[in-house]
Length: 140
Image (tube, rainbow, N blue to C red; front, top):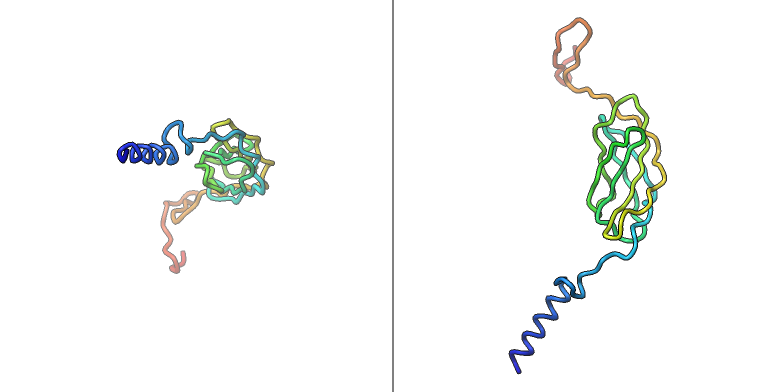
């Protein structure tokens, strides 16, 4: 009798902890809602997009740029993503959509428009001159 009780307790524990087919194994019954409060901030040839999740839990989020359809996909626990590979001097808006085991939910409303920052850095080339580096606080 003692052994039978121990086996029953062990099987119940495995089922509760997510053993395949047990109580812990649960699929979402609906897709995630459209993310809300989507906002974008310009970076160097990139943008950081933030949002607020709604509806069912997502396993991933995909951010899509307009124009060009550049995407970035992040884990479902994230509430921001960095979209890279954008062109400077181009204005972009972004939408976000969540995905889970039931499928992909509706896309968010478009974010505010941002224009990525042009690349630059310590090495700047002037027309007709050799590249040179500027030290901080040392003047030209």
